[in-house]
Length: 95
Image (cartoon, rainbow, N blue to C red; front, side, top):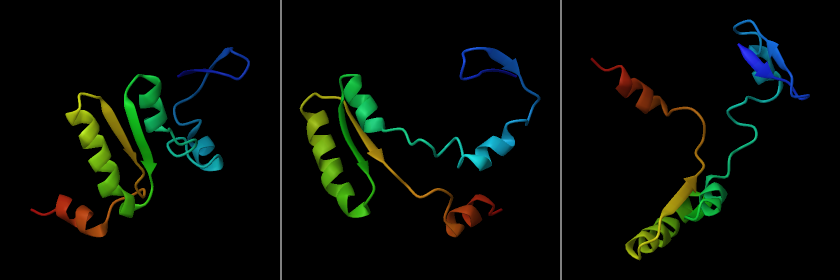
């Protein structure tokens, strides 16, 4: 796979070569977190969040739904804990 290094040059990697990098740097899928609400605002939509507390969900969704009812485009960025609840995993494998 070709990757661009910090200097702008391309280098060739063997498959799996950067797997250790993800562990070493905290995981590419978590760091840095993407602010989807800000990204939405940058594109002309209304961005709500990031919501990190479940107590804020109802109010945030009410604001977003009201905005959409008024003709706006809205994005709600909700941060959730990584992984799956054990009950959800068990439900995937029921026969």
